[in-house]
Image 1 (cartoon, rainbow, N blue to C red):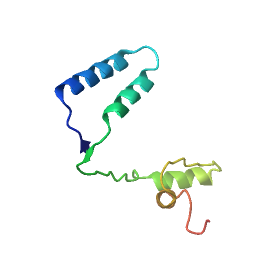
Image 2: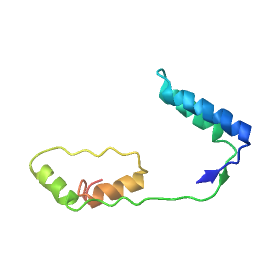
Image 3: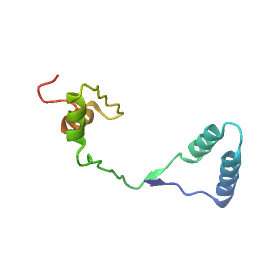
Image 4: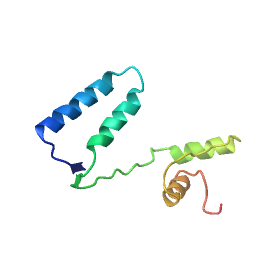
Length: 99
């Protein structure tokens, strides 16, 4: 979490830019991203937050059943390698014996 104090004029100008971008029929996402980037500079860091995702009950058993049935199961992730390996192991996607 971070913050940045804006003068009233700067805030009004940015809000007008954001509103125009939010109703644009062409390249809306690009315009919204550009508006966000324009104001998200020189921020004061206030803190950080994290969420721990836990596997739902039965995931490991379901994956084992699918694999025994001959199905291929893949995991796609953007996590760090260490996190991905831990998730794959706890979900029975891989075993400790696998490399």
